[in-house]
Image (cartoon, rainbow, N blue to C red; front, side, top):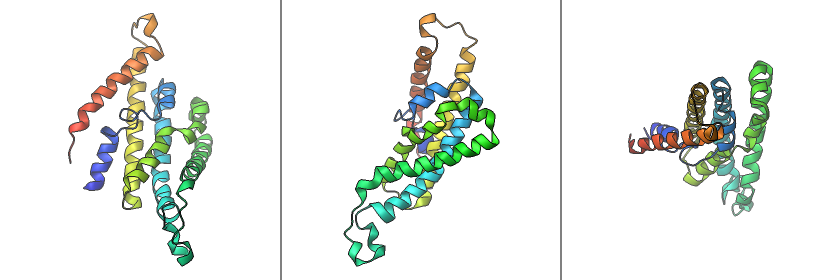
Length: 204
């Protein structure tokens, strides 16, 4: 039940876009087409689902003070926490490279439409933010970290896909010239953020 609570909250209440404003660059730039947005959302979700348990293990067995005690008594006082960001970013970058190669091989059209934003998943602050939140919240096991990663990925996917669907409809609307493009996108994003605030009352 606790894992279900974490999963639901990470989608609706602790949404990376609407609660923490993480990953906004690709969220705003790619969300012009539903198919492209959905593909990027799936890629981000995959990276989050794999990165969270891997970085949890790295944190628990390498980084936290005393984590290296399994190597012997001489290492029980070792503290490698200063290497956290370097190792986390390295894991994320490696996973993004795998995702990029898979998409290029099996979906060249999606690869072409995502362009530069696919490799930029490696520096997507939503992914690094989820990893750092995982470290901060001290999840008890890698399964809980995986659930949190899956929820965060699904939340990001839902956000970018919904915005893309709205923007596709807006192309057929008569929008005042000063608000066309990024202007109306900011307004819609703000309204979606307010709408997601209604989920603050969720309690499982």
